[in-house]
Length: 199
Ligand code: GRF
Image 1 (tube, rainbow, N blue to C red):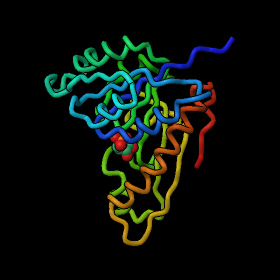
Image 2 (cartoon, helix red, strand yellow):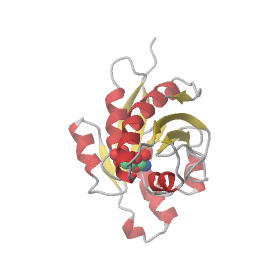
Image 3 (tube, rainbow, N blue to C red):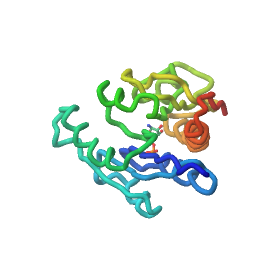
Image 4 (cartoon, protein in one colour):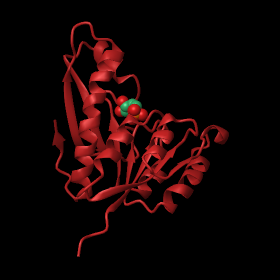
């Protein structure tokens, strides 16, 4: 008897292009389906894109919590647990999560980061790669642990840094690879395979 599809919740903060790439990949014989797109910003453009795709959405605005992460996360857990996800994908989700939250979903929460980790955790990854004179850049998908942009690597994709690149042109080249890498990693991960995808 065939297994019910794995339930995937997607957390976003902005436009949601990675969320769309993931959701579009979860069709046909894919062993998973998106069950929720959740944002910390009710105005995030990705919420409307998810609704257009027929995926349930929810938003928990972080600002009213004035930096009280535990209280914000307690509110975030309500729609998240109600969706009963097997796997959680952070897809352009820009809030730093506490160890209590990441520990609760240990081994089943993924994140995409626009650098070749362990290089450049945190923000402004493309400008830092340019400032360092790197000849290549890229993106990484990893399991989420308490340490920011750390955790076991599940995939990486590399792009060349070209003459005349600025942070925007490099980010655009990396984003194309993000949209290939994250769906490839998710498909393997929900099948129980943690072998890194290298593009
Ligand atoms: C992406 O580069 C992602 O790696 C980073 O935020 C950017 C926005 O992505 N975390 P999206 O279009 O909102 O998915």
